[in-house]
Image (cartoon, rainbow, N blue to C red; front, side):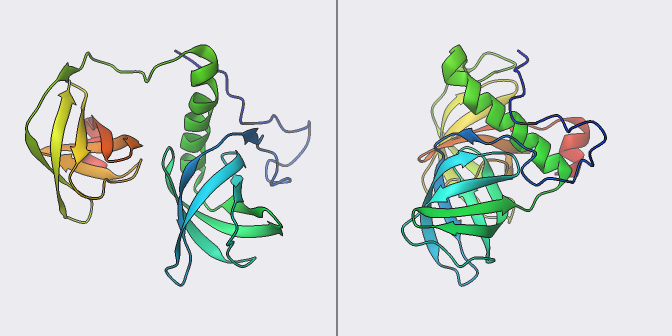
Length: 202
């Protein structure tokens, strides 16, 4: 299903595409996660609004203005950001991402905004079947994560991690198959298998 893209604004006629940092629409969306400061201080986060270019984060212990932080959003994965504005209730950040990463964020945010309104489920290219048993998922740094397999299909699988789960967007290996983490909820996470050029780049 193709979703309407609510997160990109069309530039004014004759305007430069880089003219306005706020050219990406922000939407009211509560996303949980955590952020890591340059001094390795790990704090929880909750967004008030977000776009594919930045977010406003509610926090009683914000970092310093101008500081670079690393955000780990439960629904978006890892995003590097710069703190650009402070308020009594939190702080605003601008994401430091490539154009490709920004497009992926826009697609994911569009899905999150619309899924409850339209009653959508996560799209799956093949039926999944319940499964049980122990599994070992190899993380991008080579670490072995012991898991319990919960369901599997021709295009992906779901696991319950016995340790700290990976983040959305992380590349992993399940057995001999390269995969990308597409969903994380608590200790549970799901992956889609990578094929062709995507697998070669992993």
